[in-house]
Length: 122
Image 1 (cartoon, rainbow, N blue to C red):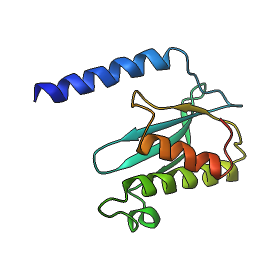
Image 2: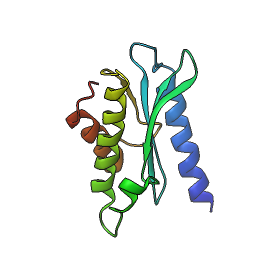
Image 3: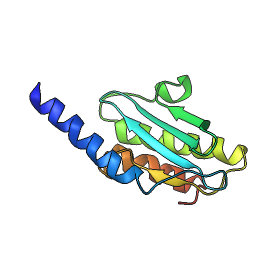
Image 4: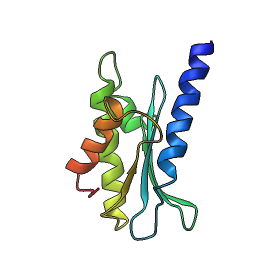
């Protein structure tokens, strides 16, 4: 149990260090990623207004049906494509990527790759 708390504390420490320098504006909102062992979530946030502009996750029915054993990275890529499509519909082309303290590999990297392929610029 203590190692779990250590990992969470380390992630929150990285998050605090990263968020000192990242701030989403109206022109360039923040694309943040949160992952759990089972799901992955992405949100586009305007920090000046404090509003979530778009969101996507593996909890949605269209993406959830692709979940299966050994398919988490592919599904994370779908989440990235979904969030990019929703952002482009709302007129958002450029974002700032916030990995939320998670290491940039695996599913977090897959979300960013999917968003880039679908047309977001960051």
